[in-house]
Length: 101
Image 1 (cartoon, rainbow, N blue to C red):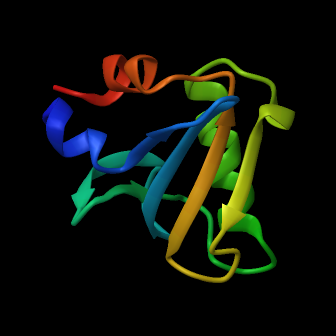
Image 2 (spheres, one colour):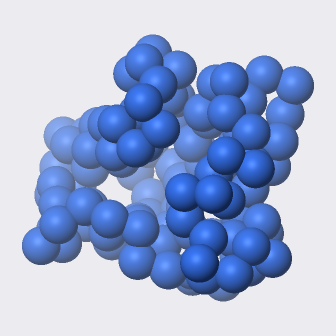
């Protein structure tokens, strides 16, 4: 993913970063797998049952950026493949360093 492609999924706010995601549950491993339109495509090892995929998504971003789990919040898409996640204290520049190629 190039920085301009990835930037389409990111929005800096006063308190952190909002990331638009497209989720692929029941994958063999949890990882960012590219872009899906203007959304970051994230494969999740967890199934979409009882909030397990949502928990896995939050855990993944918390561990990837070494931020507390309380700093990761699912804003929308609790029962959808399209999700918006908030990462408190993170900026788009930091996100780009991690995932842009």
